[in-house]
Image 1 (spheres, rainbow, N blue to C red):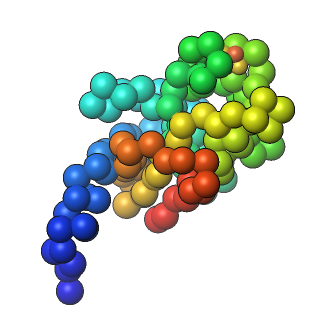
Image 2 (image 1 turned 120 degrees about the vertical axis):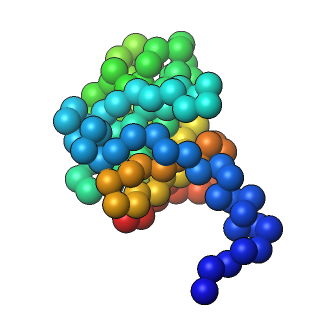
Length: 124
Ligand code: FES
């Protein structure tokens, strides 16, 4: 039975279609703009991660970064943001991230940025 509670309806209102897994699989990273929000999407293994595209350091595009060992490395000054948390341990800062859901081939992103104590998870 579907849950039509106000909480579920409010939550659903924040999820937007960002891309497809097929599109993302080509280069394993992709920059999209959804409702004026620039988002960097990354695919590692069978998981998809979503970050605010603009680096918290000096505004470089994380979508142009490099995926390596569970991190995305910013092309600006090589800060390494953990894919699961957005945390950069050497700088003790977090890149804003978004929750991700996958349904069939569609990748949905929750436009409410998550905090660093809420791990980014993907579901399929
Ligand atoms: S702009 Fe990203 S590390 Fe400097």
